[in-house]
Length: 178
Ligand SMILES: [Zn+2]
Image (cartoon, rainbow, N blue to C red; front, side, top):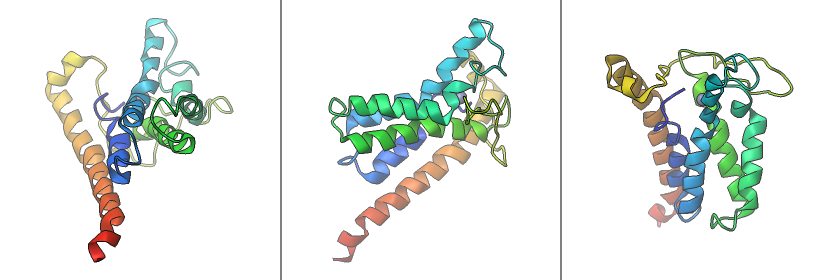
C-alpha cells in the first residue's frame, strides 16, 4: 500500500479540482476516510487470515463491489454530508476504488482482488512504480521509509497536483476569457 497519508491525495485533488462549492467539507472528509478504509483489512493478519485469502489483505475490501457498497452507504447519508445523492455516490466510489488502483501500482505485496466475489484473481497494474510502504509507523523513519515517501510524492502527489491544477484552469477558463 501507499502510506495512509497518500491515499487521500486523490479525493483531495478531485475535490479541489472540482471546486469546494461542489464537494462539501463533510463529503471531502468522508472521501478521505473512504480512501484509507480498504486497508482496515490488515487486521486480517491478526486473525491469522492468509494474505491470499478473499478476506486477506488486498482482498474483498479492495474490490470494485466494496467501493460500490461504500458509495451506496454514503449516498444514504448524503444530506448529512451536505451533498446531493448522485454527487456523493460518484465521489465516494472514486475515493474508495482509487485505493485499490494505487495499490496496484506498488512494487510489493500481492495483487488486488478487484473482481471479488466473481473472481479471486489478484491484479497488478502494467507497471509498478510506487514503492510499497512498510506496515509499522516506526519504519518510516528508516532510509526505506524515506524512499517510500519520495516515490509517493513523485508518482501520486505530483500527478494528482497536476490533474487538480488542470481541472481548476479548465473550470476557470470561461471567466478568464471575459
Ligand atoms: Zn490497500
